[in-house]
Every structure is written in C-alpha cells, then in structure tokens.
Image 1 (cartoon, rainbow, N blue to C red):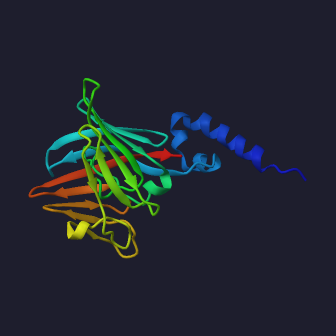
Image 2: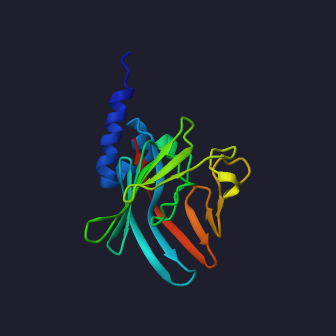
Image 3: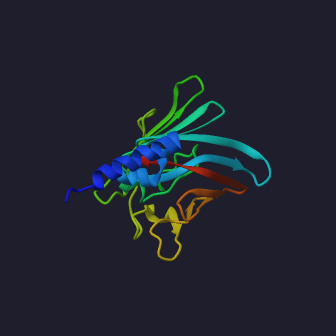
Length: 209
C-alpha cells in the first residue's frame, strides 16, 4: 500500500493556507508539519504604571529576528537558535538586560531616523550560559560567571533568582535595586525599581529556525 501521509499533509497545509491566510504561518500545526522549531513571543506589549499607558509596542517576527516598535523607535533582537532561546526569558522591548538571556545573539535600538542608537552582542559557553556582552558602539565588554544550577549568572551575588517549583527559568530576578518578574511563559510582567512598571502582553508570534 502506498504511503498517503505526505500527500495528506500537503493537502492539509494547502487547506489551512486558504482558510487562514497570513495567520497560518504562525499556526503550530502548520509549523509542526513543516518541521520547524519555534518559540512563542508577544505580539503586542503595553507598558503602564497601573493606570496610564506609557508605551505600546507592536512586534513582528521573521525567522530568528524579533522586532518591537513604539513611537518610531525599534528594538531588534536576533537569536542564535530557538532551542537556546527557550532557556531564557523575554524582557521588556527597551531592555538590553543580559542576565535573563539565553541564545540572544544581538540587540539593537534603531532610532526614528534609522540610525543605530544601541548595539550589543552576546557570547555563550557550550552549556548556553552567558559569558559576555559587548557594547558594539563603545567596544566595552561585560563578563559573567558564577552560575546558578539553571545556568544563570550570579557574579558573586550581584544577581539572584526566584523559581517556581519545577521550573528551570526564573519567575523573578533581582539585579541591584531592580526586581523583574515573569509569568509562566517567561514573558516579563513587572519591574520594580522603587516604583512599579507593568507589562501587559497580548497576541502571539513565533520565532523559528
């Protein structure tokens, strides 16, 4: 008997394309049939103080590039691989905070004029632990070491982490006087640095390799 699974998969993909249009490219079933490895990220992020909106970021994803924009400024994250990115967290679009990242290759801030305002690159060891962050604008380099059991840098106690039971990704990070909180998806929800800033994420996109 002939193997009918491949023609059926192709027919299903065609049907989904007709019925879903552009949204089908982010459908988990379609991506699974295509053999793509993906990670879900927020489509829209509202930054607010509990009452008033500070910024609303509209995001897009293409391959391993995740871009969020607000008020003409774009924040571009380029990942090295999905598997390594899944080990880390999704920070506020405007944050280049390195210690929560795993698999992030570069971070850029693009100004409304189209120029690069910030540019950082990141290196990791064979266990996907953050080793360094280089400021490509000034050539300054920050190094990281002394990791916790899940591979996040402590740097002699400069950073500390809070975990939910059974989770390998933090739900809270203390960095000096700033505490950042994350939900079960690994998406940022709150920053406390003397006053609270909240991040409300809606919709989903996927970065894929």
